[in-house]
Amino acid sequence: MMYEKAPLSLHDIIHYALAEDLDARGDITSKALFDGAATGRAVIKSKESGVLSGGYLLEPVFHANDHSITVELLLSDGGSLEPGTRICTIRGPLLGILSGERIALNFLQRLSGIATMTAALARRIAHTKARILDTRKTTPMLRALEKRAVLDGGGLNHRFGLFDMVLIKDTHVKAMGGVGPALVKARSCIAGLDRPVKIEIEVQTWEEFLEALSLAPDRIMFDNMNLQLLAACVERARVASPSMELEASGGITAETIASVAETGVDFISVGAITHSVKALDIHLIIE
Image (tube, rainbow, N blue to C red):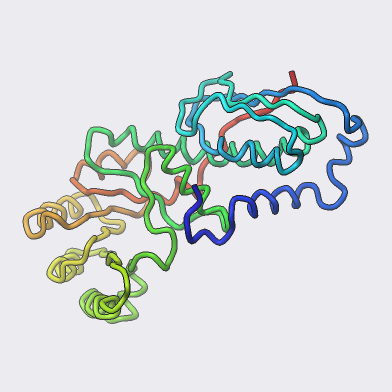
């Protein structure tokens, strides 16, 4: 499912990806070797362990080349991959299969890499109530696909863009002259909107946290705090406002994420799950 506000439809994304690869002349290598009547069967397999994401793109990608191609998915998105796991089988004209191969694999490898990293981090904090959140640090024009991959990996989505949540960052705070003025101004401006909008504010010090807590935003984000200060803020917030959402962010790694989660925060946002992932090794084989 694409986000309602995604700038490009799934059709558009696939169209532009194929156009980038094929241009007006198409796959000149495959055209030189096979005539249009040649048919075949292929399988897409994983070459390493991970979590699948992007399977929903396979049929649309190959159908964009040739509607007579049949794609049979053998594993659902979110499913576990091991070396040799068969993801799908493909049957039909070889020209269409080979012309769509790289685009299909590019999507699968990138999105499965995101799902795999998300799942790995989620496992490290499974003993806590904290959940992994993504950020807006995504590939331009592919945000909807990458955020879906986060869901496939067991994470949650933060705001999609700048339009669907008030998130007051440190730059806003400095420009407004402090946490208090920023929160007061934001609350007054959204009061007249036709739908409810959450307000989240980023804090970096104990003093900023106390000021934010006194004004009761929907969520407080603790940015780049050391564990001792973070734990103290969470403890204070749980007493003063038990229902307030609490989020940690900033430089969190696989080695530190469990300790962060154990402070009691509700969410941990990790930009690396979309901006620094390793593509999963997946390949297509003609059988």
